[in-house]
Amino acid sequence: MHNVLFSLQFRLVIGFAAILVLALVSVSYYVGQAAEREAEALETRRNDIRRARIERMVSRNYSAETQWREIQPALEQAGGVSGRRIVVTNEHGVIVGDSHRDFGIPWRRHGRRIRSSPIVVGDQEVGSVALDADNVPGAVREPPISRLASTVNRYLLWAGLASGVVGVLMVSLVSRRLLSPIQALGSAARRLGGGDLSQRVATTGPTELADLAGSFNTMAGSLQNAEEQRRNSVADVAHELRTPLSNIQGYLEAVKDGLLEANEETIDTIYQQALHLSQLVEDLRLLALVEGGNLRFNLVEYSLPDVLNRSVEAFRARAEAEGIELSIQTPTGFPLVNMDRTRIAQVVSNFLENA
Image 1 (spheres, one colour):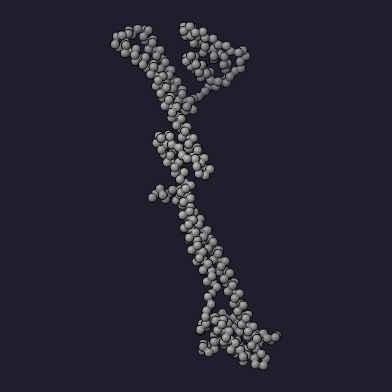
Image 2 (cartoon, helix red, strand yellow; image 1 turned 180 degrees about the horizontal axis):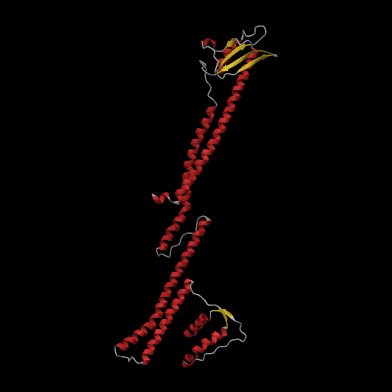
């Protein structure tokens, strides 16, 4: 459980879910605010249009002769259709028409936000009309347009939840597919660390992951080659060390068993084998320093022909004893070389020794 909670895939899913929730909340807020503003504007516009129609209807039913005596039937019809109580007063403030007069509900407007609009016929104000949508008996109420905003928010919420679930599932699948090469790489790296240097991973997928897999394969190949070289080096060292050790052991056993005398010649032979063994150990030490990058060089400007001549002179006696003619030819005026003359002499000596 702990590994799952701290896995990269789980973090990707949680991060995507957080971003999705933030985006949905932001979109819902702004869309809801915009829907509410539009609904309020539409409701206001609808009320203004209704009021204008009622005012025109009331104005058409006024005449100078009959004044407001014919207004009551028109108000009752308009009140039933609009679902609002319509009250008309004359220029003195006396109620001359009430669309809901027969319901026996007294008209009260004190303390209530009911707007009255003047009725103008010609250039003369002949009265006013007031509309009330509250407590209208028998009225069929129209659904408020503000419900549009809540409906939009509700459907937006459901759409967001569905999108979130689908998005999280898709991110889970995509992240699992993208992270599978990394998981394979981690598994191969653990086996590689356990000593299985033959591990390789497929170089497929996105460019970055393919490059990472290629780098891992290159590293694994280098480690495998280095391990093979190390094993070959160990085998070569064992072979090189076995010869002088076997010679020393053989001479000592012969002296111990009385087959040879411990004279000067025998001791000198054992000593030469010990020197050979010591030289091999020194070579191994130098090789370890070179491979570890710890070999230090004392670089000075020196004559390369002088180094070569000294190395040749050191082996001339041994070469003549074997009937080998050893000579060296160097050009005149050879420039000075920036080198470690001790190491160069050692390299030349190894060449001559092997020859």
